[in-house]
Length: 213
Length: 194
Image 1 (cartoon, rainbow over the protein chains, first blue to last red):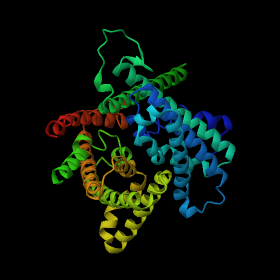
Image 2: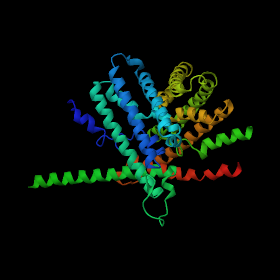
Image 3: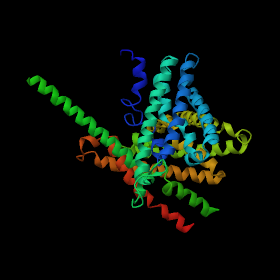
């Protein structure tokens, strides 16, 4: 396999290998806290910060971490950053901290973070691991915002608390209830699958047209 | 006292079902819900670890963490990881058959958010020993119920003719959405009685 460039490390996680939309990892927070844009954004930023910090330290200390207990060491590093993140959120945005509740602590077991440590930070230089973490973290924030905006706009008729449709709009309560989380992500994945299939079909027909010509 | 414990059990099992209402343990839910038999085994392994976690989380909260609450997340995750490791070794020694049957699912439980979630919910709600135990049993029963329901549906959709874009996760999510919608019906069950 050829070595990827720094630019690829950064861009890969945002769209082409988006942790949520393509790899379908980290579903707990994606579904549980995306009922408003504000909650989704705060959760996304907290996860981004934890991922960045953990990737930096894991790649920095990779020579000193014994192979047999590496997963436990990664989890310890991640848990430390989650504790820091939880304290920061409690101090900075107390209402959102209360709304997110146990899900902040559950960033520890978010498979995206452990996955990036095991798949990338443990084998690559500090600089490239940081780029990779920024890419995946941005990809996660992007997916959270997609979910959060869809659910808040349809479920409450607002965006970041600002009413969009006027008084006559009847909110779809189901979108902010748990089933709405499953259905929204399901519809997003189906749409992406449809777009991907169309693109592939176009490419095939373009190729056969070239052959005929 | 007894009725309160029963309430906690049913609340964790159906009204606040860990998988379909609180979204905990979704990785396992997506990963091992294609066969009813494996779903049952995974559920059994989960119940076992949940009960042990509940007991150790109670002990940690009672005897250790009062002095240092900021160590909560770190100590919970270490205890869960080592607990799963020990359980794995014990089962391997005592009953190799069961160990083979559980297979990869046992170590995977460490990163299952339902386990850490249980420990944290239990702490936040201030549950005592028995309350925690019934909470863990209810949560485990709920996880198993959701897994088996999902697996039965997926087994019967296997040969049905779905559009090609819906094959895989998209379809599973939509099915989970409808299941979750069905579970919302339980919400009125307990609030009326209590």
